[in-house]
Image 1 (cartoon, rainbow, N blue to C red):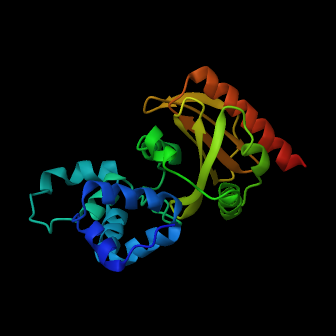
Image 2 (cartoon, rainbow, N blue to C red; image 1 turned 90 degrees about the vertical axis):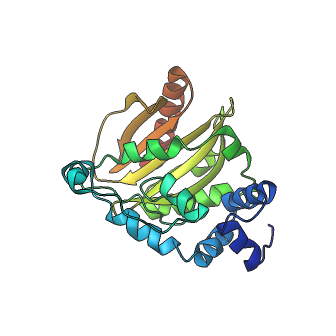
Length: 249
Protein backbone atom coordinates (compact mmCIF):
# COMPACT_ATOMS: atom_id res chain seq x y z
CA UNK A 1 0.00 0.00 0.00
CA UNK A 2 1.30 3.43 -0.94
CA UNK A 3 1.51 6.09 1.75
CA UNK A 4 0.52 9.52 0.42
CA UNK A 5 0.91 12.77 2.32
CA UNK A 6 -2.10 14.99 2.95
CA UNK A 7 -0.50 17.59 0.67
CA UNK A 8 -0.37 15.13 -2.24
CA UNK A 9 -3.98 14.07 -1.62
CA UNK A 10 -5.11 17.70 -1.58
CA UNK A 11 -3.37 18.22 -4.92
CA UNK A 12 -5.25 15.16 -6.18
CA UNK A 13 -8.55 16.71 -5.06
CA UNK A 14 -7.67 20.00 -6.74
CA UNK A 15 -6.72 18.31 -10.01
CA UNK A 16 -3.16 19.60 -9.67
CA UNK A 17 -1.33 16.27 -10.15
CA UNK A 18 -0.04 15.00 -13.47
CA UNK A 19 -2.04 12.24 -15.16
CA UNK A 20 0.27 9.42 -14.12
CA UNK A 21 0.11 10.33 -10.42
CA UNK A 22 -3.65 10.89 -10.57
CA UNK A 23 -4.22 7.45 -12.10
CA UNK A 24 -1.88 5.90 -9.53
CA UNK A 25 -3.98 7.29 -6.66
CA UNK A 26 -7.28 6.37 -8.34
CA UNK A 27 -6.03 2.80 -8.73
CA UNK A 28 -4.84 2.67 -5.12
CA UNK A 29 -8.28 3.78 -3.93
CA UNK A 30 -9.87 0.67 -5.48
CA UNK A 31 -8.19 -1.62 -2.96
CA UNK A 32 -7.49 0.74 -0.05
CA UNK A 33 -10.62 1.82 1.82
CA UNK A 34 -8.54 3.76 4.37
CA UNK A 35 -6.99 5.85 1.60
CA UNK A 36 -10.41 6.58 0.14
CA UNK A 37 -11.72 7.61 3.56
CA UNK A 38 -8.73 9.97 3.99
CA UNK A 39 -9.42 11.58 0.63
CA UNK A 40 -13.07 12.06 1.48
CA UNK A 41 -12.10 13.57 4.82
CA UNK A 42 -9.78 16.07 3.17
CA UNK A 43 -12.34 17.22 0.60
CA UNK A 44 -14.35 20.11 2.00
CA UNK A 45 -16.91 19.65 -0.79
CA UNK A 46 -17.65 15.96 -0.13
CA UNK A 47 -20.41 16.67 2.38
CA UNK A 48 -21.91 19.29 0.06
CA UNK A 49 -22.03 16.88 -2.88
CA UNK A 50 -23.66 14.16 -0.79
CA UNK A 51 -26.27 16.61 0.53
CA UNK A 52 -27.04 17.89 -2.96
CA UNK A 53 -27.42 14.39 -4.39
CA UNK A 54 -29.74 13.37 -1.55
CA UNK A 55 -31.95 16.39 -2.22
CA UNK A 56 -32.35 15.81 -5.98
CA UNK A 57 -36.07 15.20 -6.70
CA UNK A 58 -37.36 12.33 -8.79
CA UNK A 59 -38.01 12.45 -12.53
CA UNK A 60 -41.69 13.33 -12.21
CA UNK A 61 -40.91 16.13 -9.78
CA UNK A 62 -38.15 17.47 -12.08
CA UNK A 63 -40.57 17.53 -15.02
CA UNK A 64 -43.01 19.65 -13.01
CA UNK A 65 -40.26 22.00 -11.88
CA UNK A 66 -38.65 22.45 -15.30
CA UNK A 67 -40.57 25.62 -16.34
CA UNK A 68 -39.53 27.35 -13.12
CA UNK A 69 -35.85 26.47 -13.34
CA UNK A 70 -33.58 29.36 -14.30
CA UNK A 71 -29.80 29.33 -14.76
CA UNK A 72 -28.07 30.11 -11.47
CA UNK A 73 -24.36 30.82 -10.99
CA UNK A 74 -22.81 28.07 -8.89
CA UNK A 75 -19.42 27.42 -7.33
CA UNK A 76 -17.22 25.46 -9.75
CA UNK A 77 -16.81 21.92 -8.39
CA UNK A 78 -13.48 20.26 -7.86
CA UNK A 79 -12.66 17.26 -10.06
CA UNK A 80 -13.42 14.95 -7.12
CA UNK A 81 -16.87 16.50 -6.68
CA UNK A 82 -17.49 16.15 -10.43
CA UNK A 83 -16.59 12.47 -10.18
CA UNK A 84 -19.14 12.04 -7.41
CA UNK A 85 -21.86 13.67 -9.51
CA UNK A 86 -20.90 11.69 -12.61
CA UNK A 87 -21.27 8.45 -10.68
CA UNK A 88 -24.94 9.47 -10.41
CA UNK A 89 -27.24 8.74 -7.51
CA UNK A 90 -24.33 9.80 -5.33
CA UNK A 91 -22.04 6.77 -5.51
CA UNK A 92 -18.44 7.23 -4.33
CA UNK A 93 -16.58 4.11 -5.46
CA UNK A 94 -16.09 1.77 -2.52
CA UNK A 95 -17.02 4.34 0.11
CA UNK A 96 -18.57 2.11 2.76
CA UNK A 97 -22.38 2.36 2.90
CA UNK A 98 -22.55 4.54 -0.18
CA UNK A 99 -25.32 6.76 -1.44
CA UNK A 100 -27.78 5.07 -3.83
CA UNK A 101 -30.46 7.48 -2.57
CA UNK A 102 -33.32 7.27 -5.08
CA UNK A 103 -37.02 8.08 -5.02
CA UNK A 104 -39.52 5.85 -3.30
CA UNK A 105 -40.51 3.12 -5.72
CA UNK A 106 -37.26 3.34 -7.69
CA UNK A 107 -35.88 0.08 -9.07
CA UNK A 108 -32.61 -0.82 -7.35
CA UNK A 109 -31.65 -2.94 -10.35
CA UNK A 110 -31.79 0.10 -12.61
CA UNK A 111 -29.47 2.02 -10.28
CA UNK A 112 -27.07 -0.93 -10.15
CA UNK A 113 -27.05 -1.12 -13.95
CA UNK A 114 -26.05 2.55 -14.21
CA UNK A 115 -23.22 1.96 -11.74
CA UNK A 116 -22.07 -1.23 -13.48
CA UNK A 117 -21.98 0.62 -16.82
CA UNK A 118 -19.12 2.73 -15.40
CA UNK A 119 -16.90 -0.34 -15.02
CA UNK A 120 -14.39 -1.36 -17.69
CA UNK A 121 -11.93 -4.22 -17.97
CA UNK A 122 -9.20 -1.79 -16.90
CA UNK A 123 -11.16 -0.91 -13.75
CA UNK A 124 -11.08 -4.43 -12.37
CA UNK A 125 -7.65 -5.30 -13.76
CA UNK A 126 -6.23 -2.61 -11.49
CA UNK A 127 -7.64 -4.27 -8.36
CA UNK A 128 -4.85 -6.08 -6.54
CA UNK A 129 -5.90 -7.39 -3.12
CA UNK A 130 -3.85 -9.53 -0.72
CA UNK A 131 -4.69 -13.27 -0.70
CA UNK A 132 -7.98 -13.91 1.11
CA UNK A 133 -9.00 -10.24 1.25
CA UNK A 134 -11.63 -10.51 -1.49
CA UNK A 135 -13.25 -13.45 0.32
CA UNK A 136 -13.21 -11.48 3.58
CA UNK A 137 -14.89 -8.57 1.79
CA UNK A 138 -17.60 -10.91 0.49
CA UNK A 139 -18.29 -12.18 4.01
CA UNK A 140 -18.51 -8.64 5.40
CA UNK A 141 -20.77 -7.43 2.59
CA UNK A 142 -23.12 -10.42 2.87
CA UNK A 143 -23.31 -9.96 6.63
CA UNK A 144 -24.37 -6.32 6.15
CA UNK A 145 -27.26 -7.47 3.96
CA UNK A 146 -28.08 -10.40 6.22
CA UNK A 147 -27.56 -12.89 3.39
CA UNK A 148 -26.03 -16.35 3.33
CA UNK A 149 -23.63 -16.76 0.42
CA UNK A 150 -21.18 -19.58 -0.38
CA UNK A 151 -18.01 -17.47 -0.34
CA UNK A 152 -15.56 -20.29 -1.09
CA UNK A 153 -17.68 -21.52 -3.99
CA UNK A 154 -18.00 -18.01 -5.41
CA UNK A 155 -14.23 -17.65 -5.26
CA UNK A 156 -13.82 -20.87 -7.26
CA UNK A 157 -16.31 -20.27 -10.08
CA UNK A 158 -15.27 -21.47 -13.53
CA UNK A 159 -14.99 -18.48 -15.86
CA UNK A 160 -15.54 -15.82 -13.17
CA UNK A 161 -12.60 -14.67 -11.02
CA UNK A 162 -13.53 -12.98 -7.73
CA UNK A 163 -11.94 -9.54 -7.52
CA UNK A 164 -13.57 -7.58 -4.69
CA UNK A 165 -16.77 -6.87 -2.72
CA UNK A 166 -18.15 -3.71 -1.17
CA UNK A 167 -21.25 -2.39 0.56
CA UNK A 168 -23.25 0.28 -1.21
CA UNK A 169 -26.74 1.36 -0.26
CA UNK A 170 -30.20 1.86 -1.71
CA UNK A 171 -32.89 3.93 0.02
CA UNK A 172 -31.25 3.39 3.39
CA UNK A 173 -30.73 -0.36 2.99
CA UNK A 174 -27.31 -1.98 2.52
CA UNK A 175 -26.67 -3.29 -0.98
CA UNK A 176 -23.74 -5.65 -1.49
CA UNK A 177 -21.76 -5.69 -4.72
CA UNK A 178 -19.47 -8.64 -5.50
CA UNK A 179 -17.22 -7.98 -8.49
CA UNK A 180 -15.84 -10.67 -10.80
CA UNK A 181 -13.63 -10.65 -13.88
CA UNK A 182 -15.08 -12.80 -16.63
CA UNK A 183 -12.67 -14.97 -18.62
CA UNK A 184 -13.05 -12.43 -21.44
CA UNK A 185 -11.89 -9.65 -19.10
CA UNK A 186 -15.34 -8.07 -18.84
CA UNK A 187 -16.46 -6.97 -15.37
CA UNK A 188 -19.44 -8.85 -13.95
CA UNK A 189 -21.19 -7.96 -10.68
CA UNK A 190 -23.42 -9.93 -8.35
CA UNK A 191 -25.49 -7.48 -6.30
CA UNK A 192 -27.82 -8.37 -3.45
CA UNK A 193 -30.25 -6.54 -1.22
CA UNK A 194 -32.76 -7.71 1.38
CA UNK A 195 -36.31 -6.80 0.39
CA UNK A 196 -38.46 -9.67 1.61
CA UNK A 197 -39.66 -10.27 -1.96
CA UNK A 198 -39.65 -13.65 -3.64
CA UNK A 199 -39.47 -14.14 -7.39
CA UNK A 200 -38.48 -16.67 -10.02
CA UNK A 201 -35.26 -16.25 -12.01
CA UNK A 202 -35.61 -13.78 -14.86
CA UNK A 203 -33.18 -13.09 -17.69
CA UNK A 204 -32.97 -9.68 -19.28
CA UNK A 205 -30.83 -6.85 -20.58
CA UNK A 206 -30.04 -3.56 -18.83
CA UNK A 207 -28.19 -0.73 -20.54
CA UNK A 208 -26.92 -3.16 -23.15
CA UNK A 209 -25.60 -5.61 -20.53
CA UNK A 210 -26.92 -9.12 -20.00
CA UNK A 211 -28.54 -9.64 -16.61
CA UNK A 212 -30.31 -12.20 -14.48
CA UNK A 213 -32.21 -11.63 -11.25
CA UNK A 214 -33.81 -13.89 -8.69
CA UNK A 215 -34.62 -14.04 -4.97
CA UNK A 216 -33.75 -16.52 -2.22
CA UNK A 217 -35.09 -16.29 1.34
CA UNK A 218 -36.04 -12.61 1.12
CA UNK A 219 -32.80 -11.50 -0.55
CA UNK A 220 -32.89 -10.31 -4.16
CA UNK A 221 -29.92 -10.97 -6.43
CA UNK A 222 -28.86 -9.38 -9.70
CA UNK A 223 -26.03 -10.69 -11.86
CA UNK A 224 -25.06 -8.22 -14.57
CA UNK A 225 -22.22 -7.68 -17.02
CA UNK A 226 -21.23 -7.15 -20.61
CA UNK A 227 -21.06 -10.84 -21.57
CA UNK A 228 -23.01 -13.12 -23.88
CA UNK A 229 -26.62 -13.79 -22.81
CA UNK A 230 -26.13 -17.58 -22.89
CA UNK A 231 -23.02 -17.28 -20.74
CA UNK A 232 -24.92 -15.02 -18.34
CA UNK A 233 -27.73 -17.59 -18.07
CA UNK A 234 -25.23 -20.36 -17.35
CA UNK A 235 -23.37 -18.38 -14.68
CA UNK A 236 -26.60 -17.15 -13.09
CA UNK A 237 -28.01 -20.65 -12.76
CA UNK A 238 -24.72 -21.89 -11.30
CA UNK A 239 -24.57 -19.08 -8.71
CA UNK A 240 -28.27 -19.36 -7.87
CA UNK A 241 -27.92 -23.11 -7.25
CA UNK A 242 -24.93 -22.52 -4.96
CA UNK A 243 -26.80 -19.84 -2.99
CA UNK A 244 -29.89 -22.02 -2.56
CA UNK A 245 -27.70 -24.89 -1.32
CA UNK A 246 -25.95 -22.58 1.15
CA UNK A 247 -29.29 -21.34 2.50
CA UNK A 248 -30.64 -24.89 2.87
CA UNK A 249 -27.51 -26.24 4.56
